[in-house]
Image (tube, rainbow, N blue to C red):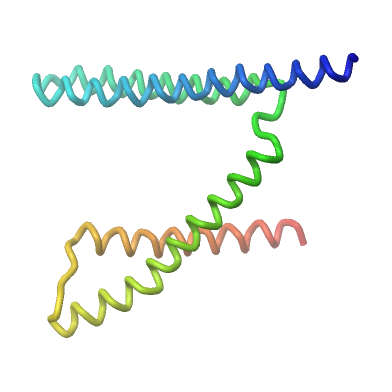
Amino acid sequence: MSEELTASTRVEKRRWYRTWIHRSVGVGCIGFFFATAVWMFTEDPLALYAGLGVYWLGCLGMGLGYWASPVSLSDEFEKQLQWDATQLSSTVIVVAVIVGIPADTVLSVTGTYTAPAAIRGAIWGYLLLVLLFGASHWYVKRTYE
């Protein structure tokens, strides 16, 4: 019976801290976007400073939630979901890089099509992301060897 109470207590603590973290992030982001909307109408930089302060308080609340939590905030199912989402995202990004960079280069050089700067920047940003992942993977692998 005590194991059952311990397991249920762990689940309740996990839920409570995850709720705290999600609310902190939500309040920070909503506060920043609201302040940005106010700034667009008033053009008062104080609104942006206030929004940035609320955003950073939300980030601080998130960090405190992770730091103060006495239990792991993710279980095996959530870790599997994160793994599957990471694999899918990585595949999409790598395909975008493999197809996008050569296509952008060939189409630009031949004068057939010039991609907008935002698309070109996104594709090259994805390449930097792939290179960063490769370097991180190499470093972590060397750490465990």
